[in-house]
Length: 177
Image 1: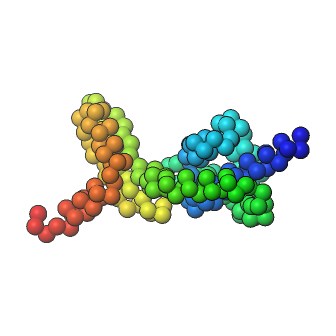
Image 2: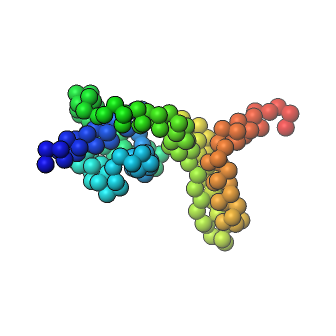
C-alpha cells in the first residue's frame, strides 16, 4: 500500500512537471501523448489523475482559441516546487529530452488553427488562423467548391504556416502588384 501511495504521488507530480516544463497551456490530448509515448502512466489512470488534479485545484482548464487547455495553477506550482525532488531524475530527463525534441510541433498545434464547414450549395468555408502568444496574427476565410480542396487547404496550412504567412504578408505589402 505504501509503495502504491508513493507511485501515485510521483505520477501526479510528473503530470504537473510536464505542464510546467512546457511553459504553455496544453491540451489533454497532447499531455496524454507525451505521457503515453514515454510509457509512464496508462491512459485511464492518467485521465483519473488529471481529473483529480483539476478537482484539487492543482490544474485548471482554460479556453484559449476555442481549445480547452490545461494549465498549472499557483497551488499546483507550489506543490510541485515543494515536492519536485520526489520525481525520479531519470523520468525528468526523459520528459525534458522528449519536450526538447517535440516542443515546436506542440507549439504549432496550439498556435495554428485550420478548420472547414459546409455551407449551402455544397460549398465549404475554410478558416485558417495563426496565433502568437494568444494574439491573432492572421485569419483567413476562403470559400472552396469541394471537401477535398477544403481538407487540402487545412493540411497545407498546418504543414507550413510560416512560409504561407510570409508569402501572404509579402503579397499584401508588395508595391509592384
